[in-house]
Length: 305
Ligand code: NAP
Image 1 (spheres, helix red, strand yellow):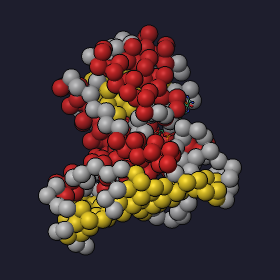
Image 2 (cartoon, helix red, strand yellow):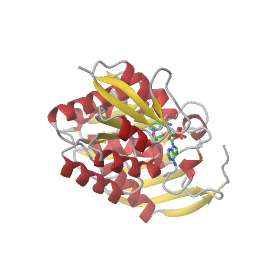
Image 3 (cartoon, protein in one colour):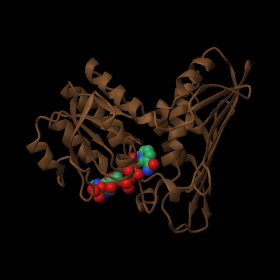
Image 4 (cartoon, helix red, strand yellow):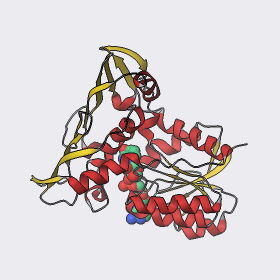
């Protein structure tokens, strides 16, 4: 039988990905939405989360599609009300608040899933398997996209806690932390802040193990979401945000589409519920926090949508 679920924060990602993924899955029934402005046709809609929690005790799971800063209050209220919780990425505004949610979920015997949609990209698992017995000599991430396309008019990305270019960059870091056979740590960062904004629009990162990253939100036209890894036994490239795997220049696995990621997240959540466990890996966010701690700040040209 399908599990009833509520979506909170009906904005870009809820409509682009969560609603279609739920509609296509036999595991789930979208039973309610909670949003101050957004709705999904045909689905009972609530404006206030407290009203939903009081009125719908028969909806055991909530999926929070809000930006990271307001998310904690919703997640805490949901767990306290006995609901299992799925968190969009990045899982919170701070690491400590997510640790607190993890402890609360454990104490209540509930599932908390800090999702990383890019880890579900088609070629990430095969890339991880291929790298398992290799020695990584060098790796480079190029993650360049147009903020106006992916976050049209969303001022929160440039406000404190919005993380700026790390909002997409953390997707690359979620793949890196999944596929590398050994962990790395940040050693240097250069962050470009538009003169009128609170978060970086570009970042260049250096990690231990000869790993580097170039994140930029000012790219026009097609995005570049590539990870290249040189090893003792050949060259791996992940393209299209982890959806296509090339070994020594030849495509060997994956599919050139991002549309498999959210269905896979909801399948994983269904598995976690069946197993009665949580999945909270904060390693991608640790790198972002380190970059914001260690990074050199450069002032860049003002940015407006
Ligand atoms: P969004 O459209 O700006 O926000 C989603 C919804 O959250 C809004 O429509 C709004 O709904 C609600 N919301 C915003 N601020 C709020 C606040 N202060 N308090 C309560 N509710 C608030 O953002 P999005 O692009 O969907 O991103 C949401 C999350 O998904 C982010 O963490 C982002 O990193 C992640 N994500 C986004 C994309 C993408 O392509 N944009 C891709 C993957 C993941 P109401 O006004 O109706 O309440």
